[in-house]
Length: 181
Image (cartoon, rainbow, N blue to C red):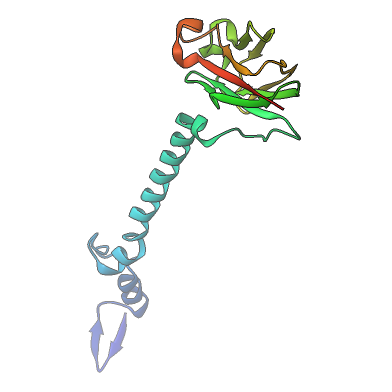
């Protein structure tokens, strides 16, 4: 204890400072103390909102990844063709009669969601029959499909026969349009 003017001071200077900082033995600062609210009150909602936005963005990408397009680009003169549960994208491929064509046939669908674990691209008229294995968790699956377009212009049907109803499902069809050279 310290004495000032002959009177006893019941609280030492060290104890007074500890009480002012909220670390003393006396009653701690209130939960609604403005100083406490300034320190953590604003950052918690902001941090929570950032976490929510991050989780929703990742979930949206995983759920709707097909709408964002392929992860790797087709190289050279290849024409990218995606197979998904919604069919082929693009639905129509235009080529010149007699042209050698290479399609970059790819999917992001996992094999667990596909009948037999594959998508197929079949064209009875063009002699195309290709199986495309399902993708893994971190990358798509892709196969190069090369054929020579017929000399006869016209529309040639392609379809997937392994999922979503197969050939009978109208969404699982596309067409190769052969045009005059």
